[in-house]
Image (tube, rainbow, N blue to C red):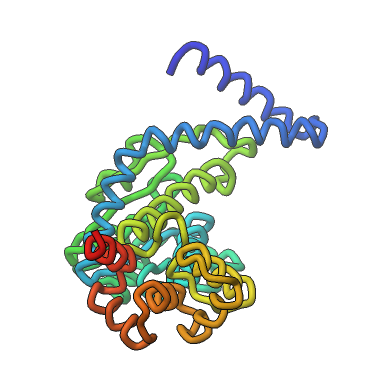
Length: 303
């Protein structure tokens, strides 16, 4: 670290020591300044994140699943990322999974001692994970016993493993195949890893699932073509996607969306290839649900 960076760190630490004396604006200005450094830390880790994404894509293509294991904030972030994949990318609810120390109750309430027991992490892995899956441990400190136990168990059953920590030379990094380290530095409130550490982890999780789904054909151009029209907002988005990809009117797009049971991909293929819904679905199934591959084949056929 340069002398300039050291000086900035010392200044921030000195400011934080007197946080209770700050005005509201001063508190959030300091937080904003600290948050601005997170993207730079994540950028440095991009080569490691890339390796994880490429492995995740391979695992899913071969019938495996993605699992996150974490405790506290880290566990909640894993569950959040996993739970948003089905509505966003139209994948099965069990393709991306978040497991938190203490179980689902720990999403709302602290479960005392759950993160301190390695055997609980190992038990949860043996309960959920198979050798063909990819397992990512998330631990800000890089040494949470529950996560370490989970990763050791995942290694033992032959699953591929990665770790996301917010320290360098983390213990977690030493027991996984792929280590992502995000040294964000001291928090504004000392030890509160829901701040910069949580932000850094969320950014990386966003990258892992989003880029993986793009590579798996769940996104076409920059559109969520696999979105599940499960509420009014998503139904409108589906109609908008159909319009953008086919050029039909809003009314026509809505009609095809209804015929396709809210599946934008099916509706688009019905319109562009002049197919009925059954044949459009069959074509998608032949490509393993990869809409991008179907569209690329269509482009080659017309070339």
